[in-house]
Length: 234
View 1: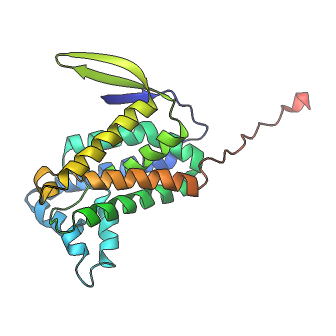
View 2: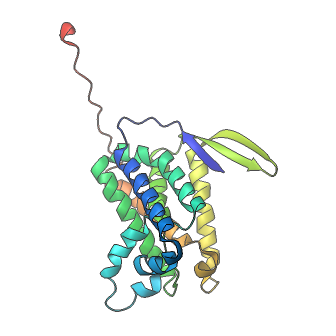
View 3: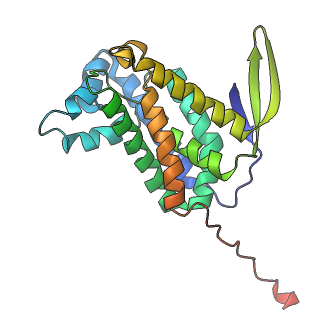
């Protein structure tokens, strides 16, 4: 299932969400510009779980976590991530406010990265992508607007249909797939190095988002300020 848009109105312009999307696109363009040097550069700037646990690397790896959140492995990788961020991020920003949303986004990314490092401590594969932080956005959206309608493209064998489905179905199913895939990978040594998918980063990011939306006051609605009446009506 591929979400196309939601029916959830917002009150403010999602400037931070758009800037995050732009930063991810710029990061991907930088990767494309590296050419033959891409693999070497990624290994030097991206987060690698096995290196994270070495003595003396913990502080240095804080920067690599941030850098890794703006790098992607393919056009499909960044395309799918940005689609989800575009659809669901604006409403979470609208609820939290611009500054708090930026902090929320990065904290979700850190939570996702630490979860990945804990469950794949020996992995030497660079962990790149905004998936963990965006998973946090999805977790927050699920709690805030479970009944929001999402226009969704549904491929069925050789046919494609478009339906409006509740957010709880789209996002809940996404999390269930990540959860059971992550649990299944526990019995396979170096599963993430083989499959290339950091399932526990997605799980950790999603859980971080659900916790942080409470902690950061996402359920405390701000009253909308009514515009003053025109001068001739005063």
